Image (cartoon, rainbow over all chains, first blue to last red; front, side, top):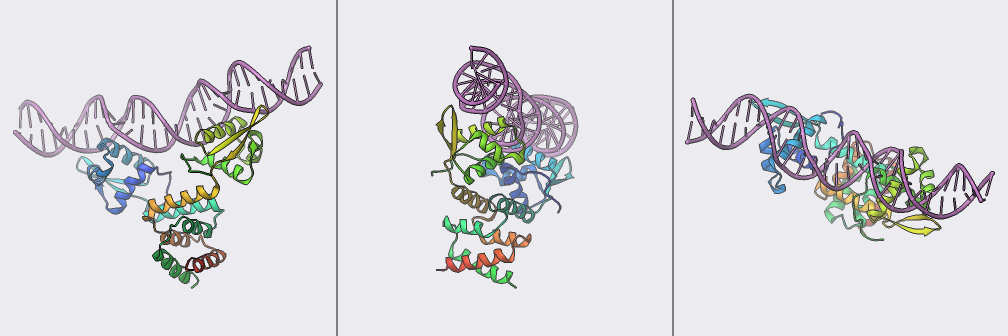
Length: 124
Length: 124
DNA sequence: GATTATCGACTACAGCTGTAATCATTTGAA
DNA sequence: TTCAAATGATTACAGCTGTAGTCGATAATC
């Protein structure tokens, strides 16, 4: 999967989540998996079209309809998003970001244990 | 400082950065400190007005002009932004976020050392 | 075969965002 | 005193976003 060409909006990201969980899917399947949003099927189709335009979702014909698949992995997207935020807010430094999570009670003991293991691994 | 009422856009955030660095400031001072953006002073004033509308920036009269100050601290804003991202992408878990930074070469030795100290502190 | 449901393409429209311009007023300068 | 510069308020306008509707074609159903 290649470069995230364009900005993905919030609603579009909800659609991406569905495709990241399973793909390829037809528009109607995507809509079904987003039922808790109670979006009109038209809305889902518009979002899919925009994602295709932005080249982050690809299509393959299936009869007279399309099946949609992500062209950008969730990993790639997440990496970009995290990096963008740290650059924007903390001059690229990571520690303040974790410190902010800690400060807002955002770290469970489990999180802390995971982080500890991760740090140990990063030190080789 | 209180709750971040509304969404702050990218350009607006550039303005907030200036006010977070120093405040109160007049619009012209803000514009001056954003010279590398080569924005028209009108643009800066529009952004300031929108931030005031959104109640994240306050004003005090100074003669016939205003002096602007943040009503939301950078800390508060950053905390919200980090939390929002982790919730959206990782179900609220922090470790994957740090792992993503690591994966994209985003962690210097210094970062890792800082994180290690932070984790130690978090464990009491 | 006739009607209905569904599909993709195109269009709509309001609110947000980036990027200003205009206007009436005031203030500072000549 | 007169005129230019600067101010806040209001307005502009295109592109993005959320949330659909319309249309012509096709597929599925009766």
